[in-house]
Image (cartoon, rainbow, N blue to C red; front, top):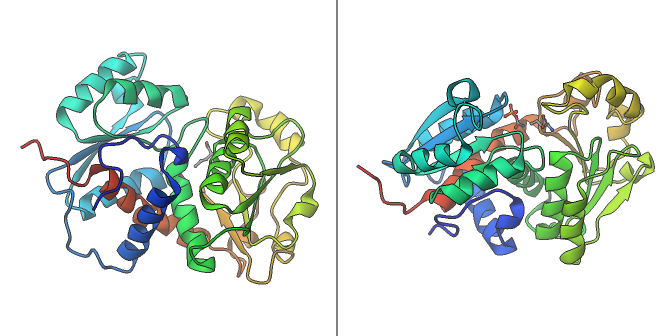
Length: 310
Ligand code: CP
Ligand code: NVA
């Protein structure tokens, strides 16, 4: 049965550890094909609202709704004009009359909270400046495929910008007990509020500028240095992140069964190189595949059981 029916998913901390467990179990089961032909979301629709570009998020939420018997409609910001053509609150109060959920990829996390405050249907974070929680579900599905479901003490090392991905990694450390280290240049540390979340939950997160932290890691993760919307800082950032590139040589220093993950898209020549993606330790494309399975599981647990409107 759905464990988060009717709720919003704006952050990984919107779920408890046991709800995460249920979603992960569903994701693994869906990947094994055990839900083939099952249509729990028949008659339900999801709006996909994009202020920014996407390949994976758009495709996987759309295909995921289709495979579960539902329907997705993609709305780009040239169509909606969130906050410009129309107030965010009015957009929310329109969408809730027609569709059963909204996935939003937005600049400001605050926009998602505004949508959620004004729509009675579930709102899902498909990336904001602050967090990318749906991505982390796929990432941890991939990690569980390698190391099993008890991740306590597993060393997950994120290297690069203390951005939305880094922040969501900290939340997953809180939820799973994985041993999270964030390696950044000085001045690019993760969000202070998210670090506070860890302090309040009694979770120890290691912050460092020292690349030595990578050695022996079970998981090495990186993401772009210049996130969508930060293009104006590109030159400063490329200089600041010199030396933080994930290379095949770096991957050779991980634990013998360690893996390399990247949420993609990759800016090759910056945070990594094609040879790292191709390295035997890379699970980058399994991770991308898992966006579909993990988000189908999420959609089932949020929308499953909702009454179709027809
Ligand atoms: N990883 C990820 O969210 O990819 P897209 O930006 O292509 O959706
Ligand atoms: N940090 C990146 C992730 C893209 C999936 C960005 O926000 O652009």
